Image (cartoon, rainbow, N blue to C red; front, side, top):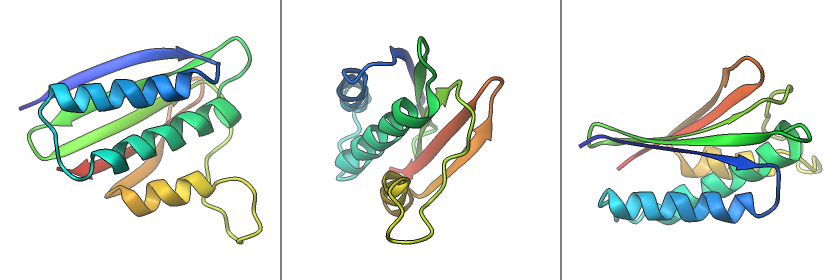
Length: 127
């Protein structure tokens, strides 16, 4: 089975819960009921929050792509038009990047890709 879902969200706080709901609904429609659904939704929440706080300039938004590749890999991508590169905090006192620690711990893989303008932050899950 394969699947693809994408949606654009404006730069507003309501976009984070909306992205979580879209993800949960999409996974349900695709018949993905693994115990990892909560982990996947949490990662979407963290990536969407990071996009809004650090990656989306005023007047812009972000796009989420949810892709089921075959029957084994779910890929989540958040596209934004901001500059800068997400990073994992180096020290416990760092105030930003903690959400990426969750993404790193809960997903099987994650990374950052280039986009003009901006970047794509992605994570993958074996399901």
